Amino acid sequence: MKFYALIAAMLLSGSIAFAHTDPIVMIIDGQSVKKSEFEYFYQKNHLGNTVDSKSVKVFADGFVNYKLKVQAAKDAHLDTLPNIRRVLKRYDDVESCELMPDKGSVHVAHILLRLGQKAFYHEQEVVERRIDSIYQALCKGADFADLAKKCSDDKGSAVNGGTLAWFTKGQTVQAFEKVAFSLRKGEISRPFMSEFGYHIVKLLDKHDDGNQKKYVADAKVENWRGTYQQQEEVENLLLNEICQRNIWYKAAADKKGLAAFYAKNKKKYKWEMKRLNKMKVNLPRNGEYPDVVLADYQDSLEKQWVAQLKKKYKVVVFHSMLTTLNIH
Image (cartoon, rainbow, N blue to C red; front, top):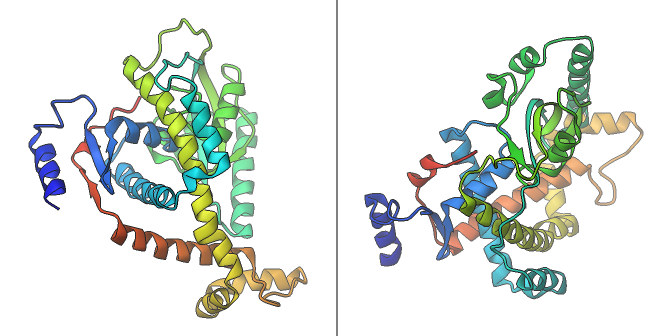
């Protein structure tokens, strides 16, 4: 306890934070998370081009949960599994801090209609029809910026006509990156899905030449990015393995728990049951429930698990450091 109190006092007083270019923003079970690491993960998972206190706080809460699960996986010695050891060995064979070559960068605008990954079928249909109508309007000559301002659920970019900051490969989700880098200047994509929902993207500009000036001025950030990409790959493998064992498989095998969860929340699934009955799918039956019930049960187990991890591991977040993010 004295150690964490001392570190917190030193960071808040500025004796450490401003003496170094890469201060600590949080400590998870004694493992420090540097500002550069948090910036990397924030920028990759946050599509908006604005950094506001609300989005940073929401992401920080989720990032803490992510780190807690990774730490639990390490404590369970899942990093000794063959598939994870192979990845670790591959990185041991190269210099982890080697400067990454410039892969080009793109400047895009987008229109986003948010859709949760566990949205009901009828909700997805509504969003699909809406994004298609927006796309048809664009095909008929409607102004992209105007529609982004009126329709996009990404309010941070909507105020600027949907315009996002320049980014390179590896800085955003794969589905979005793939479309953005496939377009020609001025071209508008067809609607497509990512983890965030449905997008329409317009390519505003593109730099393909490796000799072009990088939009990230500090070469140290490029070093950090290469290291964190490697770290992210390993952590995602650990996360997937621990979640399969502690949440996904456990929920699917826990028939009694699933039945109790459904009985407690039965009213919530009334509409879904009616839809399935119309399709002549009679559930629940023999311990089988609609996918949405299993997904919600998994969520409830995950919340319980995370609460246990927060009691097991000490977490310290220096919120004042999170207000100084350097997002390009």
